[in-house]
Image (cartoon, rainbow over all chains, first blue to last red; front, side):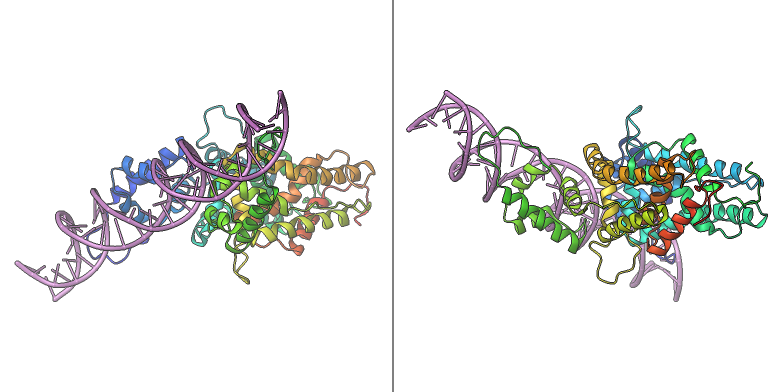
Length: 210
Length: 210
DNA sequence: GCATTATCGCTACCTGGGTTGCGTAATTGG
DNA sequence: CCAATTACGCAACCCAGGTAGCGATAATGC
């Protein structure tokens, strides 16, 4: 999201932003990160390359903006059944990641590729501002999930001596580990196993397992 | 590791390999991934750029080779105390990652950077062969750690109905999640919390906590 | 109306990853 | 000793990310 200064001088054409982002998204989903060229995006959007660089200082910045727009808000439901709520949440997050992950892969290609997700992580490492931005995008989502855990603790569904932030890491960490490091699939059965593992020791000792 | 064909023709100068790898390592540790240029590596090693590309087809391949050489074997000790063994293992892994992670950062820079680790993950995503290679490098190490868990299950220190692979993911996943995604520090206190969380539900129900 | 400010398109350019072609040096098999 | 084979250095080149300068256009404030 480019910052807008005071409204002096010729205003930016908002349609230009739109066309660039759409062109970039389309090319990213079809070709993946490496094969997406800035010149092609500019061509397709019908703008000059310099116009594009006036808005986003690097290719990384543009791609991150595109991916951020693709991240819909994940609605959290707090039904009171912590296992069901966590399952719903993790399934949503994983589905979103898997979509980005497969970008640029031919239909039916094997699942052992981190696709765009790894490029985003690398971009965040290359540019401090992108790291901040990306973390901000996910912060709300994460805060809501952690709130879910905290609420479960308050009503006695989880042990009171839990560090909910650590518990959260143990829920989502394996997911990113598979996508970014091992390349193994992150499907619903796997997520269920992760939830099992995280919840197993998180129940109060006097609670019944279900 | 370049494959060697039949010993026909002029043999490769092994000293050339050495000099390239050393030059690349030095420049990587000082400048980080992005600021390391192939031309500079070639200059510093005293070889032509083409000689370098005869051995590693891309910059990614060269860097991965360098980092792979930096990964010493982590000796696993199976003392029978699963918590102590896991602690020892995770501390070793995290220390190794943190070294690579800080590559290219000025001394005393904040810890919120994935440094080279994210570039390696991205390289693995870009080139299928590098993905295979990197996973092979870590496979032995991982297999030993999973063996540690399996052995603890066998002697009754951990529940018999555990999926040790999933438990392993829950131990190392948060570590990579922090390094690659959130940028938060991975220090020993954090690792201890992770081990606490993973082990809490993994004990047999009749076992004493220590 | 007019100076100011900022956008936009265009062209030319720099840089670094990666390739090609060629002349030459070093080795093996015969 | 000689042919085949491979390694090496060198120079020229292509491509894509990114920059600089300039003329034209569209808005603001006075």
